[in-house]
Image (cartoon, rainbow over all chains, first blue to last red; front, top):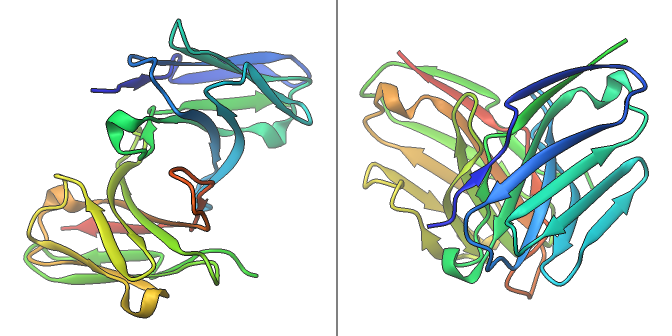
Length: 113
Length: 115
């Protein structure tokens, strides 16, 4: 059974710092991995999707990497801003889970001005 | 396009009552998903529709839960005889895809509190 873990559960950093969020999964036979952002009262927004054949994806100040063999992904945020404060969740899909999203519990990120 | 909308945003009910939530997906999206999320956890898949057909249901979806998507447009999720353990955020998402996976667009959720 696929399990997705995100550590730490919470992270607080000063504005302007670069930071890395971690995601690990137990079954490396994934189809893709996605990073989402969740703001209170505003649902979830997809940030980046990495196919299993890809190593990384970039969007603006965000860069997500995928190491399928080790069951790990990282989300790198450059030059953090207070507006980046949110909970970040990763989710994977695989044939073993009927391609449904299997989610981590998220990392709550606070960027201090 | 205004995105995925859910109604109501908040619902407080007493144990044993029935509740119904509505989700309006992005127009022309063929897939619609329901998830449940409790505090500090990621969403848990409940069920999904491709057009009007309910293709998959999680084991989390007990017989007290029922979902419909008449005419392949909006969807409703009904919980009968609510229990305190049903208290959670219920999220709806929609997508357009002919592939096995897709990019899902989420609504703001309905927060249910069962007293």
